[in-house]
Image (cartoon, rainbow, N blue to C red; front, side):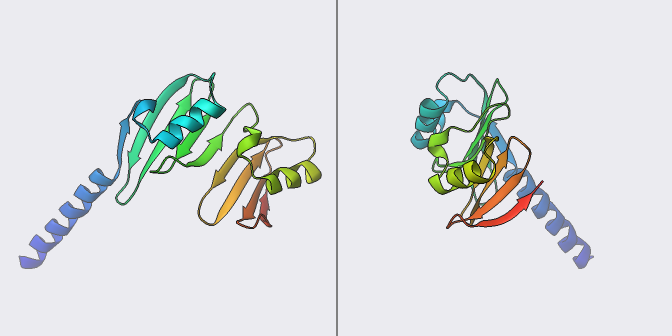
Length: 146
């Protein structure tokens, strides 16, 4: 009986943690961190926001913005961009590190970068020809996928 009670308590705790961890809430762009707001105003001034939301996980918070044209931005809890996905156009050139721009221009001259992601370890770009290139923090190519 005691083991059964402990099992139920564990299951309830795990369910409660899962419900609490997956909390997505719609927000207004004005409620997002200042850095994210400035990024949107600078790089996507004419785009219309379809949805902005805050995602709260167990130990972190992030923001996501979807535009009516299908473009998507993701930001960390401080408002720094982590992903820029421009489905039908090029990612704004000002946000792409120079070494990545140079590499893509040299090796894939007829393509444009339509998606870029960054985290603490690397950058990953997707090109208009559907190639994906991963760079380490020193901008060395570490993986290429098609």
